[in-house]
Amino acid sequence: MNLKKWLVYSFILSLFILAACGGDKEEATTGGGDSSNGESEDSLRIGVVTTLSGPYGEIGNEMLDAVKTAVKEVNEQGGVLGKQIELVVEDDEVAPDVAIRKAEKMVLEENINLFIGSVASSVTLALSEKMPDWESLLVTTIPKSVAITDPDSNSNVFRVNHNDNQDVLTLEHWMKNADLPYKTFYFLGADYEWGHDVINEMETIVEDIGGEILGEEFTPLGATDYSTVLTNARSKKPDAIIAAYAGGDGTNFLSQVNSFGIVDEDIDVIITPMGDSLATTNPELTKGIYGPANYHHSLDNKKNVSFVKSFEEDHGYKPTNFSGESYVGAWMLFEAIEEAGSANPDDVIKVLEDNFTFDSAMGELRVDPRTHQVLHPNWIGEFFDDSGEADIRIIHTTPPEFINPQ
Image (cartoon, rainbow, N blue to C red; front, side, top):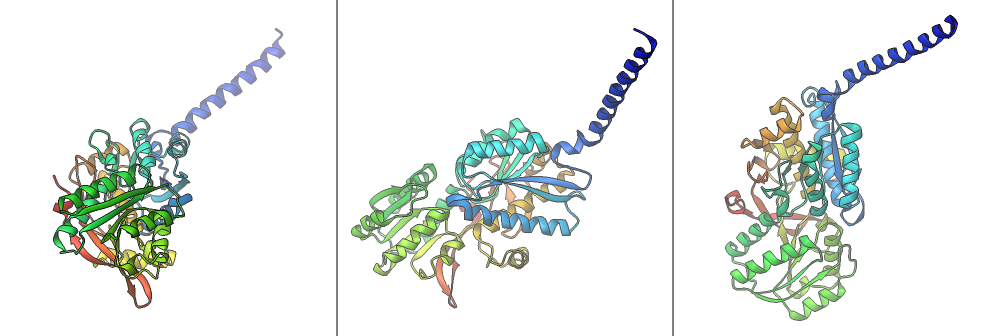
């Protein structure tokens, strides 16, 4: 090799070496440390994987609206750990595999390790199973399966909303203490795990109070026609129909309860979960509809009054039960990060497991260290006509010690 060629090769080699050294320096500056938790110098990113389409899309959007309001508020107050919160949002399409794929992309490509989500219990259970592998934390605010907070598998998930058992115990407390006239019951529910679980538990309670079960039927998730099951239920003339329908299923079901004139025949309907949107989308139903109201915008405490005002200004409607619990969940996460002094999921989990208490729009709440379930009171609501506007009012309060048995 002559001198000229040797000098050219040496120059090219030196360029490669410089480029490699420069790359290492940039990675050390932007990678590792806090950035592994979705942090940059000025921001902290949180992933929101929830249902924004399909039969549960309305619920997911009510949840997202509340989280956005919480983010706006905390950012106006200076953020969390001095950083502005940024949301990265994905639609899970009510599909566990879709949720896992989208959340994993956030973890691997965007270094996000803090999550809020989802709506369906099946999706949330799938996400929670992955959280330890991803070294991530999930705060969930809507799904109700008790399995989500099973101490054997809940290491990286915390639930803010009331679970199925808490709702059922609320109904039990009401049915045993409110001197109700019900003696006979008919059961209707969505034909998947959640619907069957709720109906099975409610049947046990009805038997315990000496009630008579006249029948039970289940309808497919996303059903639009309830004429057959309502005809069958009405023919049995029960005192009450107990129904387990959420989201769009609940809306469609109650619209046909109205068109069939069920409550006009003195058959009350007890539906779980009871959401504000069920009342506003069925304004003619102003009597005979009852259910667990896990949160309501009328709760009279300073934080809730402030939240309702802020939420209405942001979104143009009153916060629903799903909005209220999601707002509480977002603020719980912010406050736990602040107390930990870190956005590292392990540090935040340690804080939440240490009998963590926080003031919220639902009053002062506590996280159970073993189950990771937030402990709170619960309420029974009924539909009523609020000066020409359909709404829910609270008629019964179940104390925390009854629905959070140790």
